[in-house]
Image 1: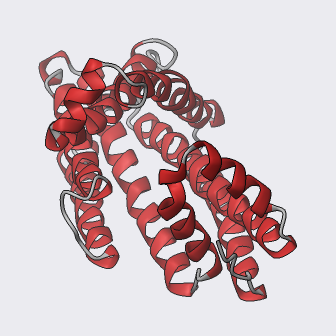
Image 2: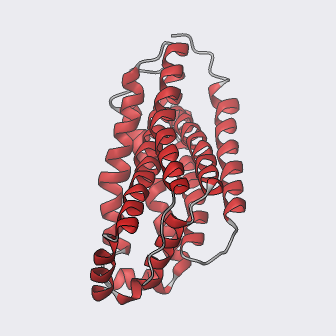
Length: 274
């Protein structure tokens, strides 16, 4: 397998992407804290809750259901639409339940409306740092391994154990070597609206916990989160084919709608004085 060379432009873009991904959430958090006199610990709770529910709890259980070979996995892969729904449901249930649990326990005494946005900044911000920032750093590592030839041994070992991975490896190599400014812009664009979604969902679940008459907002948040990830899963499993820019456009509209819907219908109408 021919290994393409990774140029200085790609390394520069990966470095820039990693820098923005790791610093922008911190800057956003600091600006919000100083502007609203909010507690940093609320943002920290949002970040830790994401790690606990989305990475430590959700991912292993999701892998158990859809990655390890067993009758349920085979049934799901024979029904790819259902597979997409199940994969999306994991994210919706675990992340929104994480928000719900945090508001009901650690943050139960923090009933000022700013708490909802503080939590959302922590939740969405750490996702950017751990997922997007990490991916750019890994791409830098891949680039160095490709240019030095160190990756060839890894490829040979992978193909010896799983020759069906050849296309996936080729796609990875081409993606790293061909990464351009449009890829960086598209990725950062998507993350902005993902954070908007997370803040909006955090506001929705906050009011589900704050007002017993609005508990129905919790399953609504699960449904909205599942719907967004369902669209992404359909694309991932190649059940639909949407150009990257169009898919990100859909996510942008979704993120904006959830954020401003939550802000205008819930957050802005809350006149409770603390």
